[in-house]
Length: 194
Image (tube, rainbow, N blue to C red; front, side, top):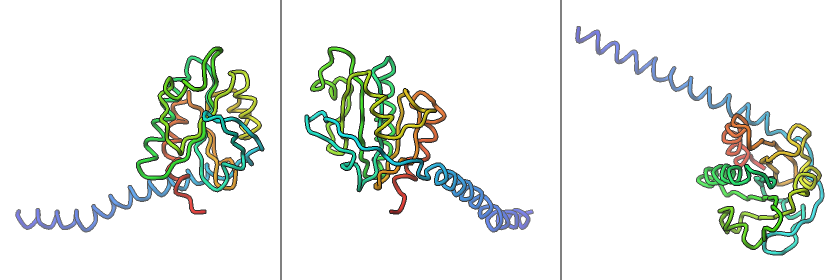
């Protein structure tokens, strides 16, 4: 009986563990392959100029040379929760990668730009460029600047922009499945070779 147990353990180690490892490695490879297909360039970033929170001009050319996570968030009842979702995604990515973030956030009437970072609990990191606009300008400006597809127009989204100004993907912040997809694809995007 003791010999049968030993033989069973040896077979488990020789056959079972490699099969188990192959299954999970294959699953990870398939997930990365799917992410790479989803991250193929969709369009080119448009030309734009905007004013940042620090009252300096920022141009579309300023985004080139680095990979960016772009948050486009209008002035609506979901603004705080969508900014939190963006912060969480960025925080998770920062554990492994250098992350550059560019946000366009809509303002309600009477809100002051100088108070917004504290009010929205957005950090003062140097790799996070914050711009604010009147609520009725956010989506039209963003649609042209970031070539937002019709399926994502006039919605709070995250967009991925590569170092050549190509749009890699878009994710709706109110869609939980798209957020899960973003969680899987952002690390792949940030680790792409140039």
